Length: 301
Length: 43
Image 1 (cartoon, each protein chain N blue to C red):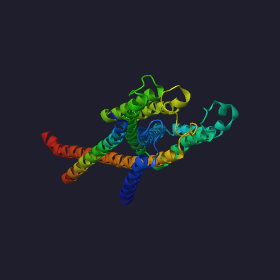
Image 2 (image 1 turned 120 degrees about the horizontal axis):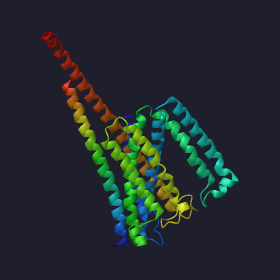
Image 3 (image 1 turned 180 degrees about the vertical axis):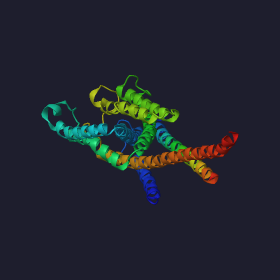
Image 4 (image 1 turned 90 degrees about the vertical axis):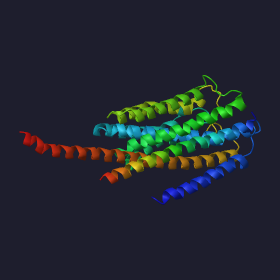
């Protein structure tokens, strides 16, 4: 494990470097937007990584909340299995299929829904007990970093293309900003609350906050918005060379995000170790002082 | 501002944000390691 981290770091730096080269040199120039469209090679992978991290935060939070009681854990386990089975079959049924927006494949919808129980069981297996809470915190914090990049690079693309920095009232933009604010408030709660219930409250906030994630993702399909249509699953109008560069860039950012999460996870474990050591030290100190004061109190009698 | 400047600003801003965050992680790591060392000395 100790060797894996530096090896992955070198691989990530190489991939990010090559992704940058592809984004600036290999990818063809857009006929309408010119070179400024190349912002999507940072904007879109950052958005997808943020979505994935918020999804992991949601799953870890649900699992953490469910783990408080054996009966709840069992019920949530069966709900996850039910969602997976129904989600796998339903998108292919004609009445449901008719309601899926044009350009969105039923197989893509089924795969996305099946990921919920898959992640639920994998996260529970790999992150037992309090590590679930550490995972939730880690994914939210790194997700906010990626979402911040989305909110910074988006207006930098919009200004030369739309002529405005921000389209007020646009549902994609507004829901993304709301999503960012929800996860920032989640982090503020975790940072400044010292109550014993903080972890539970944060997990509950994360579950409700996650409701905004599908709204952000699906808003461009269901609502009239100024934001460009999806580059994947939305009709597939992107040049295959551009799509290749975009997917490569996402892979590089995904690996980078994984490494940052790994570091943040280790940091949180170290922090809890230090807190535990402080608590033990003060406990030993208190015990020692009570032992020395005991003979005095006896002699006083 | 030239459109290409927006592209470079976006790329630079991305890495400034990432590096700033990594910097905060490194700072927090070294602070915690220092605390652990001090706790070890206390024993």
